[in-house]
Image 1: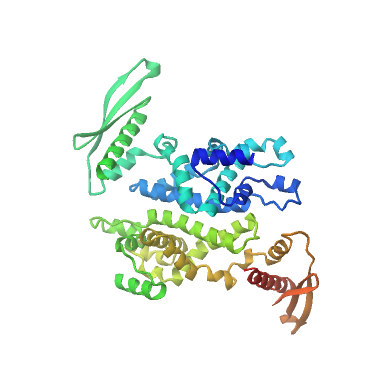
Image 2: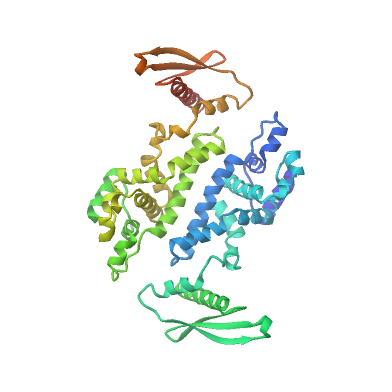
Length: 233
Length: 233
């Protein structure tokens, strides 16, 4: 089993642990240690404590820099959506960490391997072990593969209010006129699709579509922000 | 006022900001920005969001490494005692940050400058600004001056249970015999002073004194841990 995870980590994330003990510790639950009292094993909890803080900082810094107009309240909500049990347990599964957890028999039987709270812990402890073994840069590379792309695919869009962000972006240097215009509503009553454009000073900045006007406006603002940021880079 | 803080930071912490705007932003409350709407000022909240995560990680990593036998639950309690409003507001005062906060008139009148919640925020935002300006190493140096010495002077001892730590340390490699022995109880009834030694396998590891046997035992365990760690280094 040890070899499998080594091969997976190398293939999927170009990660090779120098100190294998750290990886073992990160994947070992207390129930397993209790069943093998003479092996001098350690369980993941201390490393998880560290990994949690590492993830908090890397995610905080990334969204702080990526969304320079986003006020603190929204940054906090976005971070809470990214750094939470639901997200981390999903990431743990995507990385197949669930397959390699060392569990006691009772916990295995009780279905702990599929328990979100354990998988969240294991994702944090894995990151903690990687941090101890290879430092922050290695964790950044990992998180840039596993977490940050989800910001682009819309996994956290429910907490990102693009209309407000666009308004803040355009009003940095004073007042700005912003207007949303319905371009089209097509389809049968039960399956309407709206298309909306966002304009500032009568210049079209972006368009968006969606099942409601609200969603279409959010998508238009999102496209506008993306274009403005590319232009500003 | 600007010059005063620059001089204080340089003298007390050898800190010189490259980007003064970051320091200004870290010390400016929203009420001040609102009173000066045309100056293009920013207030501290976003930088505070980042500083909070920076402090969490640096404190977590420090206690993780300093107390290698401390279980997660205790690490979490210790971190909570160090990274909290009561501690951070005290640190902000000790660093004289309170003197340099830019407040609106209403907030000034309402006593915000002495409000723990604001001082805590300002301590975090100051650290966030230092991190953005000079990176993690500069924050580490600052925190090693301002926060970590307090672990040695006992500011957080109420959350550190040294007896348990010593037990865990000695039992890493199997069972260990640990015994506390009362050496002395001296003084008048109302002002008794206890002196206690801690022994393992009949070897005296440390002694401690205190107003109760419990406190004396904690101090003896603390001395023993300190000596054992020095020996192990």
